[in-house]
Length: 419
Image 1 (cartoon, rainbow, N blue to C red):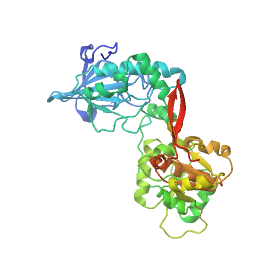
Image 2 (cartoon, rainbow, N blue to C red):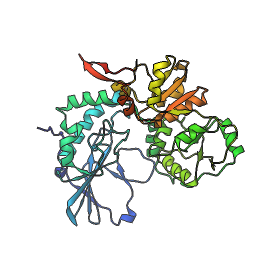
Image 3 (cartoon, rainbow, N blue to C red):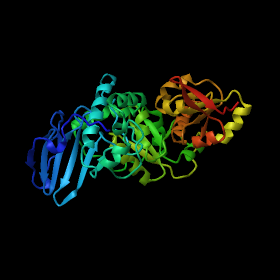
Image 4 (cartoon, rainbow, N blue to C red):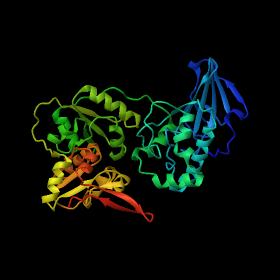
């Protein structure tokens, strides 16, 4: 039997209804308790807002934060079309992370998140669910389900918070599973309280080769958005390769010192615009310039080797001095790894390069993306590096890996070894 939260059913909350009139004059609804510095329509738990045919019920769902709200929206023209906008509360398959306010608050917020999820689960099962965070988000506490839409009924059968035995077991499992989150997250709360500003979505001013070389000598970062193999083949000394893709801003925001100037290198103006949009979403607006790499030969470049796990296997059999660096998260490394690999997660690498022993250096992750950023940082630091641009499943297929098993509550590793 699924346990319910102690909060009352949303449909039985006291009605405090306000009609807000035409949509064009609606201020942004926001939690009454949040000390924001912009115009908003303050709302609180149980309030009902009416906009044309839409009826909005405000639901307090603490857990992701203390003042988190969800919004249940019904349409009088479509009575069976209720939708729940759950924010960072109930996600597809899991819930939003609960450690954003610090370790001393995490357990209390985790228990609050459990109760909030159960409160939302009391809604009609056909209610469609639209969370803020989707598949692969670092704002989730566990793996999210890769779907485009779901209902409350779907979540009742699969969501971590709704299938746990009880609140205590859910809290214990969630606290044990929490991994790291991007460093730029800590800057988001002050930015959100300050309110939105117009995002600069135009391309940064273009620089010539002399300008970009000068930027490389300055205090800011120069980031090369080109394909990671193109960057490995030849790049300007000091440039950091972060290939443009769906997670570019996430990983760059994780390792970039906050507030530092950022200059971009790209293949095209379209790449620059895509990067500009991604970076604006995480609050990185200071882009003093960009350089378009037109494919022509540029003098005085550097690079590094690219290989796969098959070549690594051959190397490990004959070169005992080879150093293997695993840039995945600790949880990934603990679950399955190549024996002897040194684990330094990408987000820690720039501050821990001194821990890497001397020797021919090979770098891997799960797909090659994080390892490519790491290889670039290592090259900038003067280390001769080989990027393993390959999937980790290839290492397992070559019998290079060992996997963790629990014995008496402790993890041990069994499997094939390269030696």
